[in-house]
Length: 294
Image 1: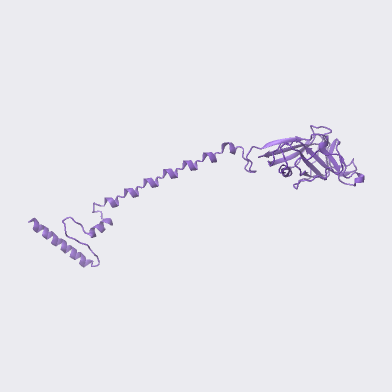
Image 2 (image 1 turned 180 degrees about the vertical axis):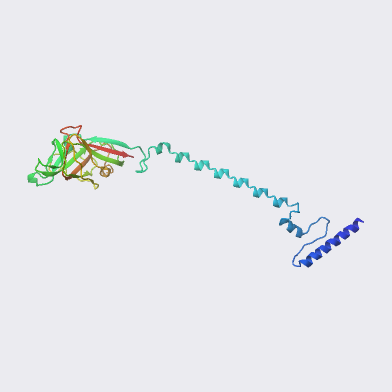
């Protein structure tokens, strides 16, 4: 009886296959009826395309090892790059941030130094106009004041003023951020006055001497600074020049410059402003102020 039933089942399956091939002659089937539970390639292909009636598709549809890619998407060691983004030792530059000057590129704190006229021969006047026979080129060291630059009482001519500041405590190749000369007015002046400032292009210039053209014959820096339309001065008041850092920078960049050397500043121009000279008051004589960094 069981054998008869199986024979009828195979016959029924054969009829179904024949009917399918008649309906779809292009389909190639590797169909086998050998074995009671063997499936055809047709059903295997259908199952891989998502036949939900086929329960044995776990290894393909349940692709946990591919879809649940925890070790790839949850890339904690890559995205949470604490050691790279949180670069404390580079961005948090504690001691460096407090001393670096982003404008000048300095790597040390700015310092300001002051140098004063050291002796009566460190501030001097030289007559520029006229001729040698009338005093041109004569250097005067013992004046009670510095006429910048007209001296009505001394042949009425314009002068060049030399100011020497010894002991300037700036290392070579320092970055000069600001520099100026401070004067104390020896008299009240209101005449129209415009002056020009420069420095001596020398590493350690000597003091002035009373020989002709001892001031004007000295080489000057390329950098010159205009001090134009100077306001009126009142006797006893303090006045400062514009920034002359460009001239001072040339000096400290000189190959022979050394810490503690002297700097000479020249004043030329027209008009008159009278400043206290060393001979009258060393404390009120001209002073050089320089702000620098390294």
